[in-house]
Length: 350
Ligand SMILES: [Zn+2]
Ligand SMILES: [Zn+2]
Image (cartoon, rainbow, N blue to C red; front, top):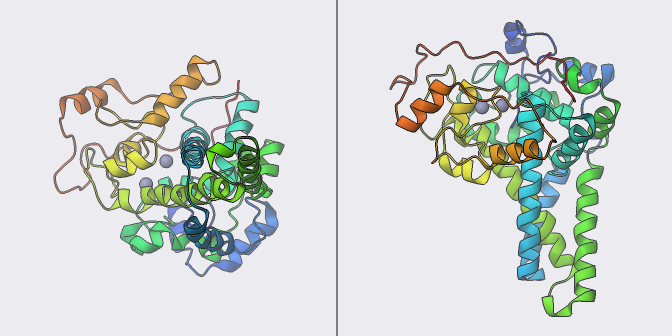
């Protein structure tokens, strides 16, 4: 879900689209220099290795069987870590759509890191670049520019997309704990894997009638939901830029796709999102269910979030009335002035 014109994401300001566009896909040397200059997202492993391993590990489901309790752990594991990505990595960190305290910020970052989609700085850097260059050269995962498969996952493994600099995420990188988490992000999903294994062992030893085991809970509680989370998140970058309805005539190919929305806690209302990227809310009508928005509102009700940014009332009214405000050909219409992403905006913590 994120993009990175050769690993920069705003590191050079909003006016450098030509620069980003000129960065070729083989610009690994530039990426390397950014890595030396500092940071974002550690990952000393080859990026594709854990990704392949966890996919292959899915096959073990045929050997461990299943149980209701293992399935329940999997559902909770999926939903919680999905919210870490959608609520925190995406809407809170990348777009500053609501404000949280520093401890909540870190807690949300850990939850997002548990999804095994790398650290918060890496993720946000790429996603801000996606919004800056959407469906143009410089967008790391555009179906229009690179094709569906590359937009879905191949972009993740190009050398140039491994080490974005910190300039474009300075609002987050100024927190030491966020830099540390970004560097050692892989420890979080490893801990989740160990915890699910331990939980399975505990359940099997304490309640044999549950008919579960350590390996079964590891597979159902970590391996399968991690892979499902990968592809649901990636579908926002690929499917939701190719298939679905366009309510707004944004400059890009973003679509509202109900199936992607269902799988991603509301992130599939992607055309709405590209029209109002700073909004904490993406589903605009009753039928556009947006569980992440509900979760953010729940955080606010608990006093853990504030300053929730919403879409204008006219957009909500039009969505509820079923009116389309874009042009049928999908070209840029009167709504071409999308709100700019304020990637350099300082973090606003309580
Ligand atoms: Zn997009
Ligand atoms: Zn976004």
